[in-house]
Picture (spheres, rainbow, N blue to C red):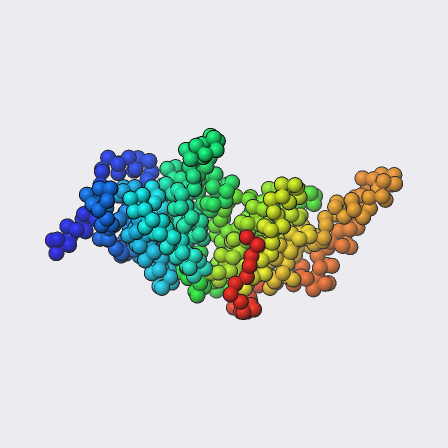
Amino acid sequence: MEALEARRAEQKRLGNQDKVIERHRDGRMTARERVDVFFDVDTFQEMGAFAHHHAKDFGMDRKRMPGDGVITGVGQVDGQAVAMCSQDFMVNGGTLGQVHADKIVDAIIYAGKTGIPVVTINDSGGARIQEGVDALTGYSRVFRQNVLMSGVVPQIAVIAGPCAGGAAYSPALMDFVVMTKRHAQLFITGPEVIRAVTGQQCSAEEVGGALMHASVSGNVHFVAEDDADALRIVKKLLSYLPPNNLRDPPHAPSKSIDLTPDARLDALVPSDPKTPLDMRAAIDAIFDVDSFFEVHALFAKNILVGFARLDGIVVGVVANQPLFKAGTLDIDAADKAARFIQFCDAFNIPLISLMDVPGFLPGLSQERGGIIRHGSKMLFAWASATVPKISLILRKAYGGAYIAMDSKAMGADLVFAWPSAEIAVLGAEGAINILFRNELKQAADPKARAAEIAVDYRQKFASPWQAAESNQLTDVIEPSRSRAVLSLALRNTLNKREARPAKKHGNIAL
């Protein structure tokens, strides 16, 4: 027993205390502290605690590497089992070799077998050079397991330190990435390599910092202040998710639905059709108080995605945000929405679409950048999703963007619209420029005549009544009734079952 306790103590020894103090001063935890903070007290069961590399080259035989630089195991988070891999930068720089990879792969396989989420904390100097191709093979096996478990169990990556080169691809293959603001880097080639190869000068923050990835590249979904905040974000995220693809989300439906109208929603509609509506205010009024948990908040702000609860039922929300780029869909917005829709569908999370979209963003850069290909990802995601899908059209829903936000013909189970909704191929201004250009040139007062035509166009060709008469709407509702109507619709659709043609998989336009 004494020998066993001694071995365990050796595995848990923190190493250089000065470095530990330095990490604490910077708001960073050790690998084991991250594990202890994340899991319910005394519930973590470590796997492979005594495993380590035995190669006798480059002096590695003279180094003790507790756990081979990664702590793996399973524990309870608010009573729910979760698997974790926490890389230990204080053990040989947290570098990945054969045994290190074995432990991560074993943890992911275990998560798949038992149907539980997996969380990885990335803090590593990269591939262990001394192990050569074995290190590269280790990365390959990790990536493969990430792919095999995609859509089977939720996978969440935390970037809490260096994550460079091949190591960056494992987080990219997972469902969500949380990254700390300081001391974390995520890139394929760093500033030195970029400078040596291209001559271009850049900082580590510019090429691989959290804010850059969260707002520009879109690789990061959540930015955390420090380690503790990152772990808090992961716990909150898990509170919306099922443990695996065969289970439902943690719904806690209220015993009754509050059907009381909410006047706040009536007040949201501006009198001027050109004045943007704040979609976040609509979300706050429709869904349970403080339940909206936004994903990708800093990326493609013209569309909002995130999880919420509606009378206790977990849903995924996809909503245009007219306060940014007028709510148009562009390349980044399409990618952001499509990925979120696919995640929700994989894990049985109902989807609610809130529309106020004037179209796809026009422009040379968008066309040359592949807006057709990127926009089709949204179409593919909606059409392939079999979870309950409910749409609400608040104001504008024009052209292909109306379809890309999930129209009835695209597969929405129920579609509602406010009286202020405009559903048409083009907005009034665009239609006037095409259809009435010559008439306006001859008018005594072109502006006044254009205003008259716009009113007539909206009434005859863009009103929700026309769409309702064509059976493309379930109902036209007062804004104040939105929460009650959507909640009832969600309850009625929750047991939906829908099959798809037998096939290996579709071919999304990646």
